[in-house]
Length: 112
Image (cartoon, rainbow, N blue to C red; front, side):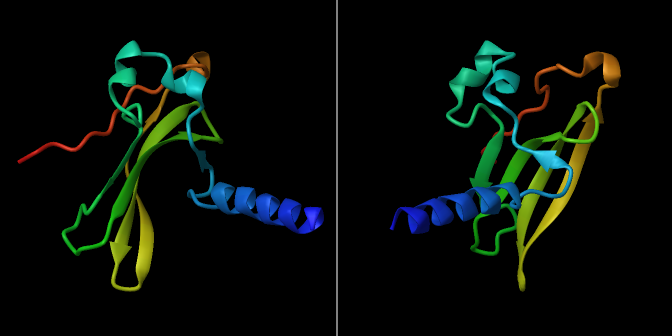
């Protein structure tokens, strides 16, 4: 029984890791802690879940860190008629001298 539970947990972690586009990952708590004002948001302004294309399905926006270079990107997992697809909306490359820079972009929902 313990082995089955362990395997389920292991596969859950793999599923989480595979959720994002290749070369991108979630920011760490340390990377989100660079600005105290991030604490004003439950997601620390790094994630948003909303129907962004008005099709009745929830879309997901994330600020992600690159695993290939010092930088960050704004990605949306947008619903389509056949499922979901990732779209990169913006990215910032800081350069090697700024490898430990906290996130500079934010995500929030503006009311029209």
